[in-house]
Length: 337
Figure 1 (cartoon, rainbow, N blue to C red):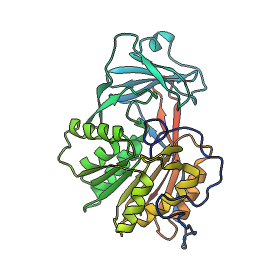
Figure 2: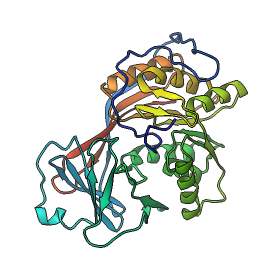
Figure 3: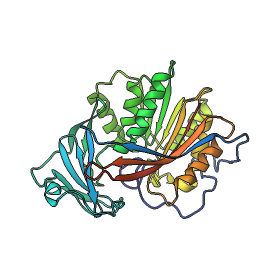
């Protein structure tokens, strides 16, 4: 799926107001859902996964509905609705920004970038934990990477390297591919799915920039639900599944995704396509009108009888100026024990 703007999985629009019901699948009618038998997995909550500032990325300051970030060589100002406190750094620090997003402050609102010092190109070199990629100024204020996901990337890297066997990873709503590159570098065979041709093109470009062109990554431009349904029918199996869906989105052929309506069915499919000895399923949800308890309960029900544990909470970025934590998203992950 892709959201109504050209973005894969971080459409932070408001979710459907309907309660979670069996999703409308795309090929064979509604998928019948029944509660799984067996004991619920153990649980670990609340779990707060935190990203600290480093030389590659830092949240320098936040407040007044904005955030000041350092992405590699550039200092960037963007809207941030959750930053309802006051800025800690003096105005002169904010005025030193290289790029400022202006225009509609809503997550779906289009705008433009203003460059106070000198005009900048669409892309610039970035790095995460030794993986080179391109940052990118988009018309929807995003920059091609979501640094709060680093906590999940590090966790996945450890699972892959510690498995002692070949690992297959499915990255649904994969966007520009940082998670796929982390998995591939760790030694996994990766299938990356996104509904946006542009995002797939950016992800392929990042693979070459990261010098990981020889690693086994399949780049699939397709609706996530359709692809997962087909993999289930084919008997394809994965050790790790990553899910970073939008609240609302459309597939390349107009397929409609509503997170509250469609996530239960997709989570159920993800369980069905797990390998006999799976490692993890990781779900991230942005700006939905729910607490992490909602997706926590969904994941525990979905993986009933599988053992392991479900860990749920929030992804946060620790601010450099005053040490405050900016929450960016909810998450829930099932991990085999």
